[in-house]
Every structure is written in structure tokens, then in C-alpha cells.
Image 1 (cartoon, rainbow, N blue to C red):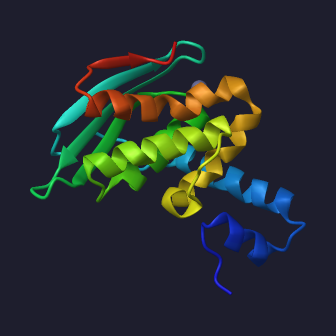
Image 2 (spheres, rainbow, N blue to C red; image 1 turned 120 degrees about the vertical axis):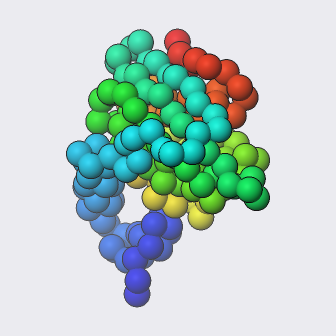
Length: 166
Ligand code: ZN
């Protein structure tokens, strides 16, 4: 059986008592994306950009989005400095956005927000690898770190230059 990022498949893969293993695996992914953030640069094509700031933690980032001729996100990137959670979240988000339309990106924002807030109606298939950040719902102070990149995305898609999580 092939392990996938779907939580249900994961649990079957690892065995029902593997919750701590699962958590460890999630932490490894976050660690990896913090150490080697993907798309941590300004892309060659930029159609939308916004700056995000999380005063609680001091996380700061500038997000760049570029679209192809079919209206799908072809270029993503971010610059800035932040804690491990905010960096990993921005890295995972910039990967997840590629190929999405503006409407699909907006829907992903809603799904991710529901995931880290621990609210209902989450489609695990839609979230894929982003599920590794589900654990922050147990740490309310870190939710703003995990959602900073996403609030910045929301601002960029709505033509706002800046956003603060406060
Ligand atoms: Zn932070």
C-alpha cells in the first residue's frame, strides 16, 4: 500500500496507533520546509503582490503571484523572515498554489483556515501536504504564524498592498 498525504490513507498505512509517528512525520515536513523553503525568491513573473506582518511573532513576508495566459497561477514566491511555522507555511502554500485559478486559490485559503482553526468542512484531498500544519490548532499563538502567508495571499488576490494579522 502506497502512503499518500490523505490523512485517512496515512493512518491505515501507519497503523491506527501511529498518531505520534504521524505527528513526528508532520514535524519533519515542517522542519524541512523551514530549513529549505521552496520558492523563497521573487519570481520572474509578478502580477499580484502583498506584504504581510504578524506583530505577535515578528514574522514578515512579501508574497508574489504570477498568472499564465489561462488565468492559472504559474509563478509564486516569497521573501522575508519569520519563525519556522510561518516560513514552512509560506513554502508549502507557494507549492500548493501552482496551477490553481484565483477562485481555486480562494477556496484553498478557506480550507486551510478551517484546518488550522479546527473548524469543520475540511476536504483532506484538497489540502494534501498542507495537512502537516493541522497541529497548530492546539497552539493558538502559532495559528497566526501558520496563517500569515495565507492572509497575505488573500490580500494580494483582493488588491491590498499590506495585511497585518492583528
Ligand atoms: Zn511566527
